[in-house]
Length: 466
Ligand SMILES: NC(=O)c1ccc[n+]([C@@H]2O[C@H](COP(=O)([O-])OP(=O)(O)OC[C@H]3O[C@@H](n4cnc5c(N)ncnc54)[C@H](O)[C@@H]3O)[C@@H](O)[C@H]2O)c1
Image 1: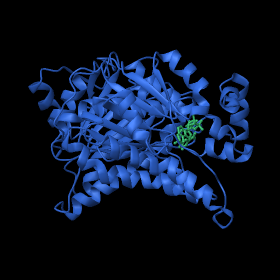
Image 2: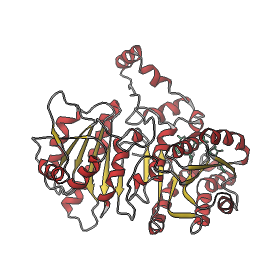
Image 3: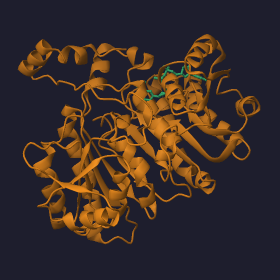
Image 4: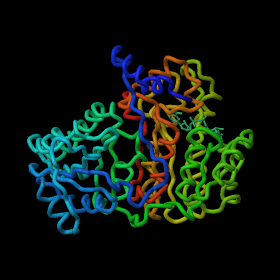
């Protein structure tokens, strides 16, 4: 489904008319055109700053050093010393911000150690003079530490303040296709920053903005980045079309051997999709009582499973027949729990990754979607509850919550609802299936090592449910 207004507003006449009428002018997002690169930021300028009290300059500078980015510092900023010391220790060259004409591709700020309202001034001092010089399609990342209940009142207040800062800045810079996200590092998660930063600083995260992700410790640390999933066996449910087909394709791009699963009546479409990506089809309904057994007998133990199959059957609760409730609950939630339960143990290889597809409908709720909303919110609780089990075997379970994505599902919406869904986010447009596929692939790969039990919204910072 194409977004005609976005196409029109990119023309010279469209730009002029949108300006005159005060309409939003959605930027054409810059998305990745290939797989993960060893040096995804080669030739890009990344400015690094820290709070004077910051404690993560070393891992941040080290992580950025491996991306090929040119690292810049602000000579006049109070938090210069920790960055300089880190770069010196790691033998990395820092350049000075050359002033007016300089347009960085990214701003990265270590806000750890801030413990007062006054301390937040250092964040302002770093960002304020530079944000208007950030290049189009730029990236802003703020990094802080996770605070348990042992954090001081000042620290916990400042940590919460960072969320408000990021969410507000996202709404300011989105019109240029730029994004801003907050990374919260839990004990030992510093070693996993490299992979996570690669995702958030690159075009693989074009539709992710205004979000918070926690990065913790893990047994495995990413070493190589390209061909991430080579030799891995990945199964994607609902893979015949839409978001599932894109997920299958993106996992294959990173080298995975993909098995696409869909309902028997979709066997033809599934075969075509799998044929395009060199994958294998499995015609099987997720709700079949023996689905887990069939997956195991036909595929063997999996490295990755993506629970993408999902349906809507919208009705106001007062008019919702029991079969509509049961159907949506079983496809979108019950089957996921049954299949995972069967695969737990011999059906998952050590280090297995599970990714479930939630929805902002499960966060904000929608009229007529008590069934759908319950399942998609249930997924958020489910991945949180199961995370410790997966961590024990070096794996992870996470969820992606799409906002408005251009698919057959959303093409069927009434025009006005569709326009509202599309425009009401910081990037003024709907996402594409590839945006969800990129986030799923991030969770399936070692770029996200240390991220477990979380739900990442991929919604352009949708104003609904914010
Ligand atoms: N499109 C959006 O804007 C959006 C937003 C939020 C969440 N989502 C979620 O993303 C996922 C994919 O959505 P989509 O827009 O690509 O939907 P879609 O309807 O285009 O595709 C869904 C696929 O799942 C398959 N499927 C349905 N029931 C199945 C079953 N019982 N067993 C096996 N396969 C089954 C369908 O045949 C289809 O191929 C869903 O979980 C949906 O809830 C989509």
